[in-house]
Image (cartoon, rainbow, N blue to C red; front, side, top):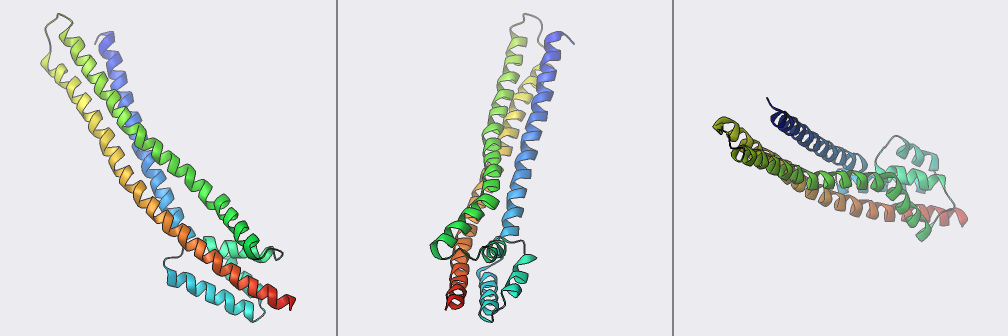
Length: 215
């Protein structure tokens, strides 16, 4: 094996490794986003309404400690935001809604934004790596043809095969990630809507309790 063939072998192996890393990292980020959205949100509106009704019941009965107990062991976003609101009794009305929204942004959305950015990077990088492999493979094939020596058809086929395989891998990585990213964006929008509605409900319940306490 001459130096040119050795260099091409290193490049081709490195390209495959990088494509595998991009595909695995993109899939890992998708799985993380899916899991975290599942952890922060209620399964359905009925479950969230049940939580809000139970919170209102405990607050109306004058049991703020019981309301805290309801939220302490629940790692979903709305119970944790409720716990934060209960610990900051001076907040009320629009100020409470804004603070809870900022808290949700800081604790949940910022992390999700970073993961979505990584998914977008993988979507953009995968086809580029495929194109890099395509160009590299074709350059190697044309170099063999232009060398003036007898062309080894099997090695030519390997070069062209490498060019096509890297293209397919790039597309096979990017397309599923695009579909998954779109599905996650839809789920995120539903989560945002659900949490916003929940924050309104929590603000209303705690606002009633505050007015009742002041009265």
